[in-house]
Image (cartoon, rainbow, N blue to C red; front, side):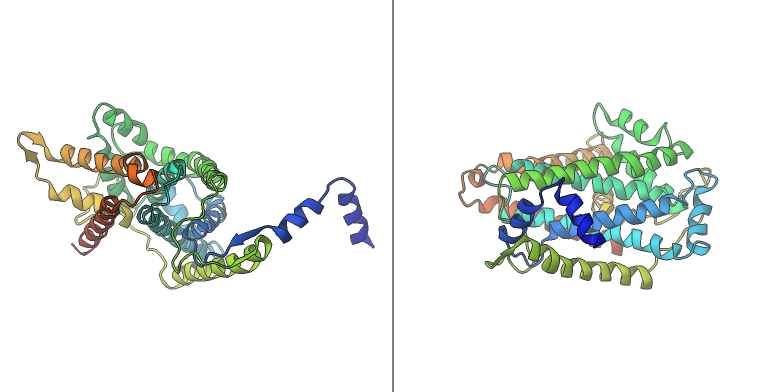
Length: 350
């Protein structure tokens, strides 16, 4: 009786008949493994685990490292949440890379879908900065050295390089101010930017009625009611991904390094996270001086130019915009993927 009264109360104020009809009648093409949907699910998990960890993390150079140890050793299930957050971030970035380059190879940016590509590309950049800012929050020796290298490379950019490095670091060097600033980025600015871009990306894609994309086993031809697809198909995929993240979190928990010492020398054989390895390895290929010019500056400029070309590819690829085959840009995409993979593997093994 109480349920019927509650239903009558809602029905008298809101009309759910149109929503129920839409759920039953609207159909969508069944996609067997949509990397975009999986990435959005992982981002949602990151928000949940990140908010949980934020209750206990102390963003201060004197207490940050200790708070991580306390979360892992003293907080009930703290080790699991920290490990789950770590592996969720790794897989989210991996799926985002796959989704982006799969979109590149399938030319899903064609037919006036350039802004879908632009928003996705910016979202990848924000996600990488998410990873970098979260990496520093560990406040151990490796994180400190890695952020010094990553933010120091920004200085090589012409005109804005020095300003951008000082803005990221909160000064001329990586200090406790950098930790506070990266914490602010990680828990406020970047989540807001991510929510905005994900919403914009999905809405633009729906407006353009995009039916192309990168799917592991193809897009499929069968159609099903949208409610059925959401409740059964996507839920199964999400549960599989959830199980994979939980398994990695249990069996491969991330280590905690030595507390960062701002006066200590940089540790030997320091390497950044895997998503920065191809940049790190590219910088190692260039000598200190090339025809009297700084080799690192030349390397950074070349990497920035390559990223700018990749970002503007939908505008450069005129044939795809006209619906014509463009094998040249398919090979360009393959070259990008091959280079990033090779440099990442070499950087990991070296």
